[in-house]
Structure formats: C-alpha cells, structure tokens
Length: 530
Image (cartoon, rainbow, N blue to C red):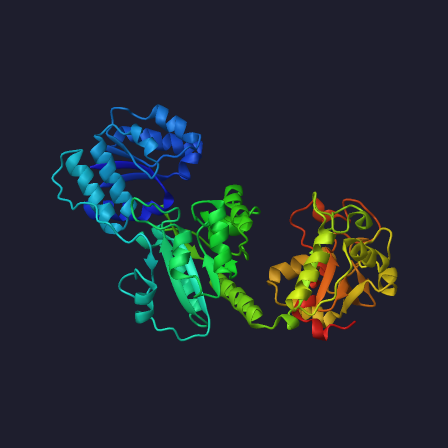
C-alpha cells in the first residue's frame, strides 16, 4: 500500500509514525510545502505511483493546479472541517465521512486505524481496524498526569493549589491529540516555579454538533475568576463573534499574553531570516490577536524537523519560555502594586526625517495628545499618583516650551537642557548596566555604528543627544507618569543625508544609544542622575 498525502504540517508526525508501524509507503507534503511550484509539481507527479491519495484542501490558489492535474481515476479521499471540499473524493461518501471522523478525533490510535480502514474498505487489503474513537474536545492537561481532566474540580483534586497566583494556558487541541507538547510542557515547568498553572486545550472555533466548546466557552469553564494571567497559544479567541471574544476577555479581566511561533521555519532559519516570521504569520499571529488586546508577542518556538523525515514538530527556542514567564511575573507583580506607586510612560510617535516640532504626537487621524491628557485624568481618578495637563493643547505646549524633544536640526542639546526638556541625564555607568545585558553581537554592532557608550563621533556624525558625557532622555513628568517623544531612530547632528540617517536606508543598523537608554527611565529611575 502506497499513500500520497497533502495535509497540515501538524498532522504529519502521526501520519508518518502510523505508516511506519503498518509498513505503508508514504509520500507526504504539508499544505505549506505545496505553495512552492517545484514542490507542488513533485507532489502531483507522485500521484501516479500512489494506491490512494489523501487531500486536506483549502481555498488557496495553488490548490486549483492540484485539483486540475490530479489523476481523477486514482482513489482519492478529500477530508477536512469544510465539507464543501469533499466533492474532490471519488470514493463512497460514507468512506469520506469516516476518514474525516478519524482525522477530527485525532490521536495516534485513530490515525493508525484510519489507514487500516482505508486499506480494507477502499483497497480491499487484509487489514483489521477499529471504528473512530471519540477523544476529549476540551480539557486540562498536565505532563505528570496519565490523562487529561474534563473539569477544573477534577484537576484541582489531583493538582493541589499551593501558590498565591494562578496562570492559565490555552492551546490547540491538536497539540494535545498529536502529542506536540514540548512548548506547552516548557511553559508549565517554568511557570510552576512561581505559580499554580491551569493548562487547557480546546477545539478553537468549537462545534456544537460534536460537543466541542469554543475557546470563549473554555475561558468561562476553566479560567474566569480563577487566574491572574493567561498565556494564549492559539491565534485568536473564538467566542462565536468578535463581540463574543471581546465580552469573554472583558469578563476574564486579566493580562493575556500571546507568544509567537515560527510555524514554517526552524530556529536556525528564523534566526537567519531578516524578516523574522513570515508576513502571513504577522497578520495571523500578531495583528489579529493585537486587535483583541493581547500583549507581549515574544517568539517562543519554531518548527523542528526530525532527522529521518522532513515533517515539522514544534520546539521551544532556548530561554524563551523563561523570558515569557518573567514577563508574566512582572505583570502580576504590577497588579499587586498599589496604583499610587505604579509608574507609567507614554511614548509619542516621532516621524523619521521630519521636523519633530511639526510632528510631536502625530498619529493618523488620531488626537494622541488629547488622548494622553484624558487617560492621565482617568488614571488620577482611579488612584494613580499623577498630575494632569488641562488638555492636549496644554500638553504639547509644555513639551515644546521645554524643548522636551530629540531634535538635532533646529534645537541643540544645550537648549534642551537649559529649557527643562531633559527628563534625565543618564550617566555612562548607569547606561552600561543596561547595555551590558544585551547579547555581545548586539553590543558590538551598536558600538560599530554609534561609538562606545554613551556615544561617540563616527565618520563625521556626532554622538546623539549626549550632554557633558551623559545621555539626554527628554520628556515631561506628571507625577508618577512621564510623557516622552520617541527618540530619533538612527540619526544625529544637524545634517540630513544618507550617512546620518543611515538607519532608514540600512535595516542592519541598530538604533543609537539614546534610543536604547530610554527604558532606564522606568527600569532604574531612582538612581538616574539629573
């Protein structure tokens, strides 16, 4: 028996293992692979040698060629959640529905029995099989438990809470069914050093006919009024509608973190790619979740291709789980801190290569300055120790009167300091404490472009925003809040040419020291010299 399959990358490992167990020859491509013309042609060519073809189609354009050039006489089973693609099958509908059930229920046992079923019922081979076995659609998983838990009560009866705070993890059911759990396990182990953890999986969109709850319903069942933060490994929440997602998140009322995955690249490929993750992944994994208000899109994992095949699993990138958990910890610490002691920074946009005086707080069709003034007022009413400008007009007048900007063409550093625009003068010693936390390669490239801390003249380009050997960070203080205009991203001095503004023309050039020094305002403000 020889099988050619085009299916999701997440399905590959179980399919490969099942074929090995049964001695079945397999030619398999992920749906991502066949986007490339060369791979697609090789895949289509393999149809001729197959005894059975398995397809998991989508609406992507490249499927038109696959559909057009497939061998219509070859036994073909087209399956997937969208039954409108089942018409591509040329076997009885009962077979298609049964194969789809094996796939939807998932897990190693079902996939192995699916192949046995196809061999017996389609090809007439001497296989014995068991019918599709329904598995849990949602539940709570833990790597130390023999099985998943259907209820939060059962989970807590097994895993006794012992910490002040709890953190939830929401991940795809396919990770659990396919045992693709390395990243989930890494997060659980790292979180359990500080918190109790509730790791829940679900079907995403949900399916009432199957009894599968949506992610919004799973939030209701497992997380509401129980957790202090949520790590969402799914792309977006599914609560029946955008309004449903918003309502579920409002009711949850905790920070929601969304780590990123390089689904199509290994860690080595991701590190070598100047674009990082693909544009499609940016849209699906960054932009859409951001609209729901999730935070901290830190990459956590990438694909791992085993040595004996080219099919991906997902693996953590070293230290990334620790980094994400540290961010979760800091947010929970912030939650526990009295509002009167919290410090907040507002960073206003600054258009590169434009006079900052004309673009302070620029935002497309938005009055960002008035927004900051109103937010400060609401913060004060809520108990934050902040002062408030009268309105956005007063705010921008204060910024401009004090020259609290990072401008090189028309305003000197001396004028900025003399008029009170320097929020802080960061000494070389304080800055180097921060700078030394960076990777050695980052430090070397920064110094190569902008000189050693706090900045030096390089190739006729003066140090950016350095006054008496200290880095000038501009802004206006309103109690425990500061309002800052974004530093220049890669220029210094009064000249404006490709050499000075090189960061705009060379994506490899890092930002200057003043830009990197900005976080010290909130990181180490009490010891900053002013």
